[in-house]
Length: 213
Image (cartoon, rainbow, N blue to C red):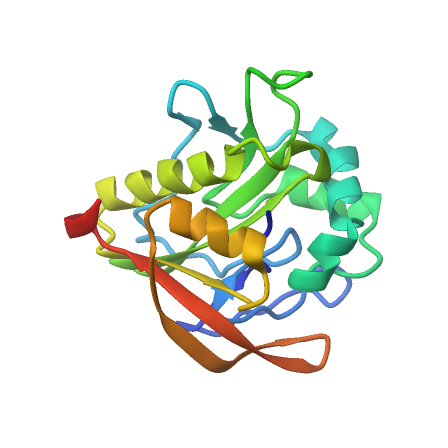
């Protein structure tokens, strides 16, 4: 499952032209970096886990798996990942990842600790965040992403968030199922909510609030 990563909406972003590019309302991929926010309550989270699925910091040896994931046709269809994502770009991302952003792993996988995807939090305000996520092709269908979304949502609520949002293309059924299984509520369709490689597209908007957790 994957959601086209790229949240912003609360302030402009500036990226180096050779390795970053603009993103929009509710999603992100391994290519964009938020501006520094000294009051960000979601920084320095470390590893998170529900006892089975673990979210850990990036390592340089994640780079090859990240490149393979970004080359997957399904990832390219739904996300802002560059069409020719290079190993140098992946190494840069792994060495200098945005915070908060985690690698998804599972101890039950064939290679415990291996990159199985990633999930990011985009901080719009201290009380409003959105999630971006994408799964590695070899890790789909195991419930890892749903567990990761629940873990990060609980983390966000514990850090004071009052709204966690997921936005996904209406036809991206896999990512929509993740949000729904994680307990998010469909609020509606944000018309013309993103531009992906020149194509203006709608977004299905899901949310979770602490009262319903």
